[in-house]
Image 1 (cartoon, rainbow, N blue to C red):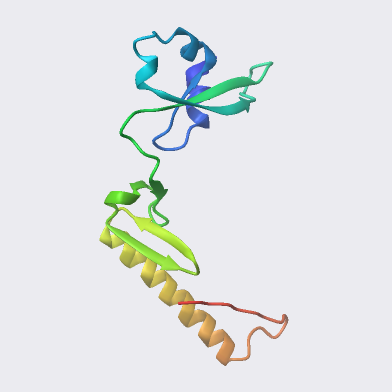
Image 2 (image 1 turned 90 degrees about the horizontal axis):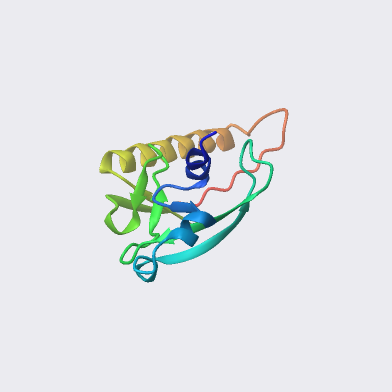
Length: 133
């Protein structure tokens, strides 16, 4: 069994997770340069006991990341190609083409909802649509 693979599977994009043994064995010279944050106990596949995981936060790095809703790529919010606010939610994009695809999909959805409302909605169900652009 590969413990490193199990630990890595618990991490989000850009996140460094380690076990307590790594924290314990880190040298006194390295530890002051790192910020550690305990994440919690995780039950990992094929391990009888939960494992305590820690997040290593490197100096100068921030957790200002989002997932592009179109291509699912991790995006640094500070360097994103685009940012869109819709229904009180902020979306960040890796490229202008992803912004364009997202905006076109919103427009397509809005046109579909408007057509449904103008046609009286669904005959079998009472429909309620809330769209805020």
